[in-house]
Length: 213
Image (cartoon, rainbow, N blue to C red; front, side, top):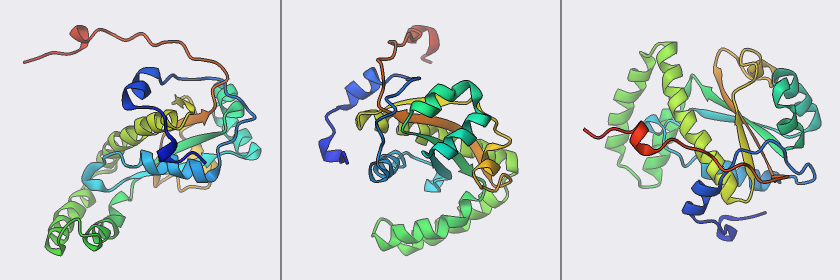
């Protein structure tokens, strides 16, 4: 396992050298222990009211990969050669665990009980009034944040990634035994040891995409 104390990359190296990779060394397998650490670090990303709506399915077995390829046939190389593919979902019932989250914050001394009660009395009713579309929009923002952090965290651990949106979003939850009415598919991310270097990216100059007022 590669712990955080072993990481050699600083932030500048991570953001400048991360690449999207389509082919990996199929002999390299990421242990569940290290994958759990990568996910743990990724979930330090912010979320609305810290409700953490993201959920993950780590697709690593040959059987599971074959099932995924049926839903993402144009991404077969990434799927088959990677150590795993992480499917990111958003939980529409994300507010259900608010009491647990804020209760733990109180237990750890991060906030007083009075603050917890105040937040719960406003946040939970707020999200309960949200339409499904409003919940989806909130989930998409939060899951986008954790997905980007996952890409950076993986690189810091020495692995390459490829975020992919080209998959059957109507069938993926059910294919991996999730409630499709509750869990919203966001993105799938292949992860593994790069078999070759990726191309340097080309980006718009800031003066073309930013405005100061």
